[in-house]
Image 1 (cartoon, rainbow, N blue to C red):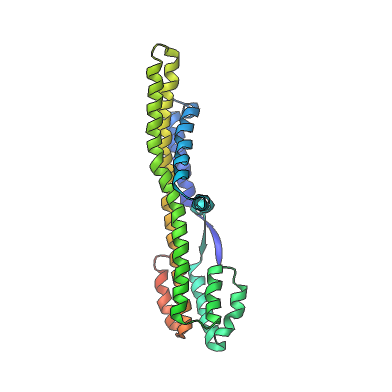
Image 2 (image 1 turned 60 degrees about the vertical axis):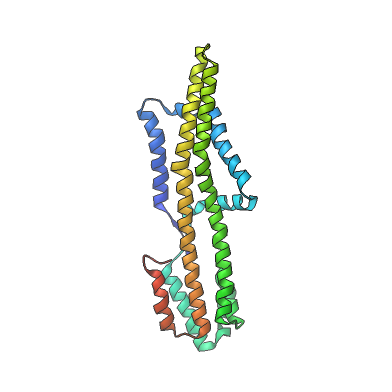
Length: 255
């Protein structure tokens, strides 16, 4: 059974990040308005995304922002229920033969599981099932990891663009030494650009990338458990032996 589980730690972390930056600015006496600077935003945020757009393919960039929701509402599968589901398939196969799984395959909404069950129904050899399913597992994992690396790249470029923004702000200051009323804007751009770059990287982009990597690993472990179960059914293993083997995947809370 697949359901949506809200990741409370990600929500708390994001809120604390906002408190750290916004609250720190208020407590320091600068106020919230001091954190907004249009020039710094264009240089750092727009520049950072520009760098990443040059680096990645459109499909990968779109996928990255399609899976970003996983840090808050990661679609997870109850490990114990998944194990029981696999065991029920093995019992059906022992009673009715592999063709008895055709109904389960037709009712399955998860395309990965459906594909594996159809291979069973079609009488594919265990080695063939593992090979076909491993290829899909690896392809999915690699594509998802590429999406996670988009946020890592944002986290790498943001501080550098922050430095560029700071330097450009200081250049403006140096050019306006004869006009004191313009010095404040240039200095503000320099400091705010640095904040955007460093805070954006360390409080948003890099944590998001690492969290997505963790979610992707959990999903891959889950699929490995499914493959192992399907191969066991194809070999005609006893359901008890399948259960004993698959329970190893549940250590630490499951896939």
